[in-house]
Amino acid sequence: MDAKISQFFDSIGSFFSGGDQIPWCDRDIILGCEREVAEAGDSDERKSESIMRLSWALVHSRQPEDVQRGMAMLEASLANTSSPLQQREKLYLLAVGYYRSGDCSRSRQLVEQCLEIAPDWRQAQTLKKTIEDKIAKDGVIGIGITATAVGLIVGGIAAALARKN
Image (cartoon, rainbow, N blue to C red):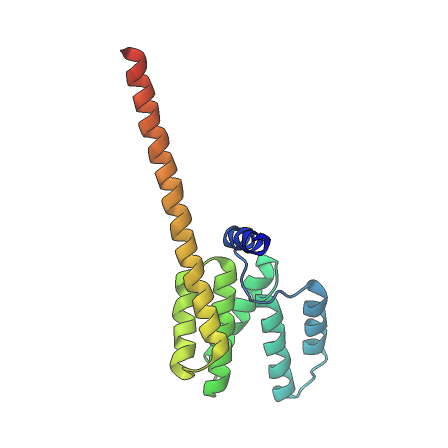
């Protein structure tokens, strides 16, 4: 019984905290990736790989300015992408960035583009479910806030009418 009660409270906590499975990245990793880009030299392939790792780290950051920077890097490089695998990766990382920025509709569009390229890609499927869960949760919270506001207004009107009589 205690396990069921604990599981119930954990699910409520997860609901309100927005607990998703997308990893976070800290400042030290970002600094290491920036150093790697600077040290990549003239090798286009090495520099490109280093920039992808930096973009990954930035969109997984807890700092909104890092996320925005990573998204800008990915959007700038997306036009020159010829490989479907690279395009898939960049679209996925952009979707993560938009999700982290709170733009779930744009994130969902991008993850659906990923799934057009690779329909069985589990990472993209998981992100899509995470996005849809967040949209549903935000809708439930919005309905709850609206219902509370309507209840308070109706209660206030009822109390005002009761005083008059």
